[in-house]
Length: 251
Image (cartoon, rainbow, N blue to C red):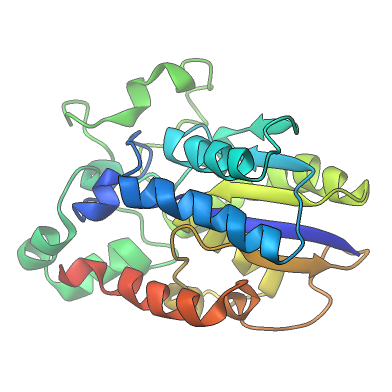
């Protein structure tokens, strides 16, 4: 049996201001930094010590992992990073206020963009001031792999090769693996692990800064079937925080 920990980054400045973030690189708030440190406390109290960490290329996930490891005195363990763990690319919604987008486009359209499994938002415009595609982090990424917008199905498609090729081998070596990433990349991974249907995945919300533990069998599937948020080390707090995530578009 192997242990996998999923950790969404702590609150970011655009979480706080209720903006679509996606691939745009933003800092953590002070609350977000505190959430990262508190995640370390929760893991320590549960007797969990990561052996290796995987993060996206985005600093809110990277800093969350660093703060968590520092609080656990485990900054020395290996860390691997990949764009395949990035947040969902929100296209031309990037930078927009969620409540204002609701008022402009209506609840049905916003829900389709925000929660529809196969409905991507409009492609990022070249003149969008928050266009993340020009960042140095992606300069070496082939043009055919660099998205202009993504639905969750796209995230699952680009995430799973990294899961099978990089994370699973670490688990196979008996290592406790921490994946510090984002709401949608972790939703995509949870969809795969928990066999969540396309129709049900819109209801899953991953809260910031709250570790979720999977015990995986030899097939790298959960040894017991449970709702994803019941796997949180503090399921009551996770459920309340997830409800807040669900209501973000309402401002």
